[in-house]
Image (cartoon, rainbow over all chains, first blue to last red; front, top):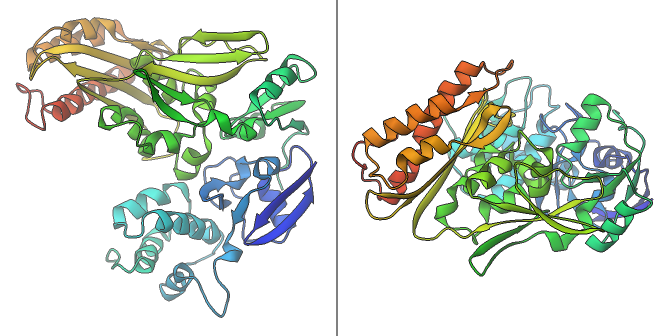
Length: 155
Length: 294
């Protein structure tokens, strides 16, 4: 089945099988920031934004994303010009192993797009959908607060 | 890469196309709405499926409307849309609560009303609709039928197209509670839904209490508890009698998430809190004769 979608402003046409997940299709077209974790929507490692909505790409078939506008971590910023969230994550030395970070960044982008001035409790609430095995939650919360131009919780 | 089992996907763009397919060459297909239940089930249990009908193209089934004192919600409305809609005011806090108590943000953006109902016994919406005396509109190529949310009896060629319930009017408030071992994204060990309508400042005109496991694993109403409050002054004596009635009328099945006795105790505490939350809202935070949220 032929599926068309746009990822980070770039058009793609893909021949896919019915059972192909969006997670796998995105990695095939080079979006390696989209990580597989639990494969059942619990960990948030594969979180991306489809038509403005945060979704788990492991629970979405590629055919469901036909004609969609998709945003992944690759589209956030460039090495020369980091997105404010990426800059805050670097400044706060957030990543440890880094595996969960692309999913966390997409959750954070979606969240700040819809709640530009959250408090730390609201940030912690939305992070319930992202599991970080390194346990970097406090630094993640600080960085998201910093990206929203607000002080974070004390360490 | 963890592949799903092989299956073909049919992508109808209208409900008519979907129903015709399900009645003919697509007999025995599984329906895919939000995917948050079907995809993990295929992964976890290795469910074998030959054909899947992807309903995501049926945009006409995504709506929340108020028409002639009836609220109508399209089957493909997402939980996020239901929890954040402006169509439902503060009386419908039971739905607003889903914005925090149903999965996590990504799940709420994907999961649909029809999908949660079709999952059945453990679905939060089955219980909420049961408390609202709601109805479910089901369609197939054979026609349309109306079902109770707790007894859908879905056939393979049927699609849940809409849920309906009477608009809440007057001094009425609702609350949905979920007890789980983690703050979000759990299965929900115990859930309760309460509705209170006051005639005046203190007298209860209507009350509805739906609990997750009323008898065995079945969602049901605590009608004995309801009758202890309906028409009565909402004071601590009436509340005490209602909770006693609740304790004697429910027989929840126990499992590895919680024993029957544990479930009964927590259900009682959650119903008490739900009633108090409704009453607090209806009396602008003034305590109603000792019925606080403690």
